[in-house]
Image (cartoon, rainbow, N blue to C red):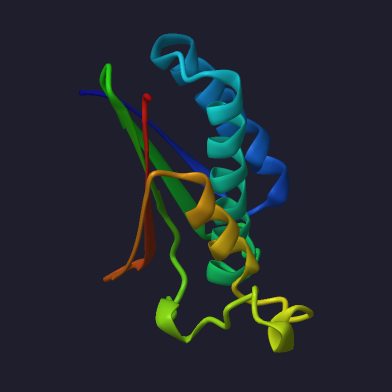
Length: 135
């Protein structure tokens, strides 16, 4: 497995650096365009959650993004320094009573864009694991 990583400050403007990392990785991994767009939607949603909800846009807190890949799959791990949350407690954004709810939508979208999705509360914050497989 090849591995690349980047650490960014908790600022929305830093997302451009992550996009550049993924462009570089996908030069080698060669995910088809539609699958790449889906991955980037998921990554961007989780990054925004990490920056805004996890680290509260405190630019002194960091978000670490690591990417491991081989010829078959890509694993993305995103860590923030926030307090974490109970993923099971997020409202289902597809239910009528939650359509206007702001919490849970990004996680729901990210889950639907990748082959595997996992959330863990770590000692230092939240950890999101996203996996895409070549079809």
